[in-house]
Image 1 (cartoon, rainbow, N blue to C red):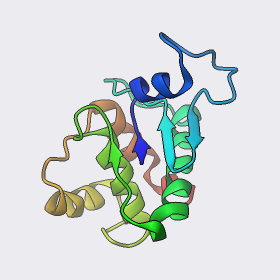
Image 2 (cartoon, rainbow, N blue to C red):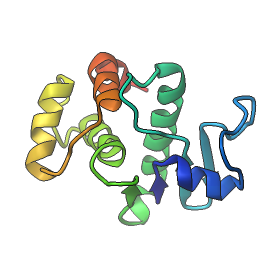
Image 3 (cartoon, helix red, strand yellow):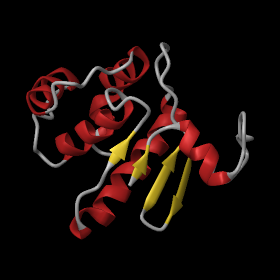
Image 4 (cartoon, one colour):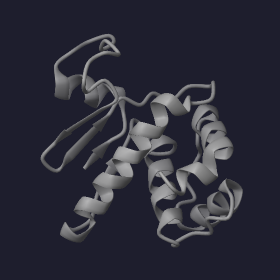
Length: 135
């Protein structure tokens, strides 16, 4: 399971507030078949220095566990961060059009019409789409 929310990351690592950025699990914590992501929806564009390692970890985690069965990806409301991770993975595997974020989004929304990315993740995906296809 991929927990794409700060609250799950906090519970898994036993902290409140913010974790020091020097902590080895500041962005990502993996425990068995669970991946905890320090990912918060926000209006400003997600910064690649934080979000690239998170997305890379999520892609690797899915690749590792996909043959074991379905992988649940969740966030707080299930309409922004978690489906965005699924969208990127599906584009990387050719399940949706990967030529641009907009093309992938259009294809993905036929499968998951509830996708309503927040402004921050949407800007990040739009600006870093080609790089995300190779992380």
